[in-house]
Image (cartoon, rainbow, N blue to C red; front, side, top):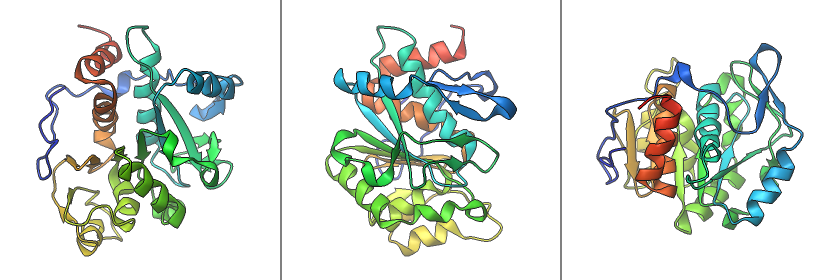
Length: 250
């Protein structure tokens, strides 16, 4: 994966995007009826076991009304780190405000943790998918999420957002004087204007990276954002291996 766009103000573009229709889930979530996820019974055992091994952890915050593909992209890409022994594993831990959250298009997930039980110092990165305010996504504007984002980033960690997931990061005060992108086609909200009001420089690039904060313009970029976050955590060669296995061909 190319690294262009890591400096503030540069848009990231990948030459060979993954074909999203070819993805399968290797994250520990099992699909049930109507494509909705059901909890795998061994999930909490795996969490404890991987934490004991010192595996780096990514906190995936899921708000009500989250964009389904953006959430699944993180679970899927990082799930592929378990596919071969030579690829360093990274554990994704899901967190939410209620005990169960529902995506805008029907995906239902019971988070591993409630947000109030999160210890920020345990995480190398925070991932925040976007969502639909008409479906409850406004709960992302929570001071506790701001504190967790500030703590993880302040300790040198990474933040990866998708679509409007960048907004609570901006509300936390982490984008003042920095560059980001967001979703531009909302019928009811001017997300870019909100970012600018919070001191952020906005672009219409598909992906922006500035000061360890990744943003993108929509779900079409979600797999590339997840792979970019993975690259930042385990290195370019290892992330290329994940991309190769996901592609299913040389």
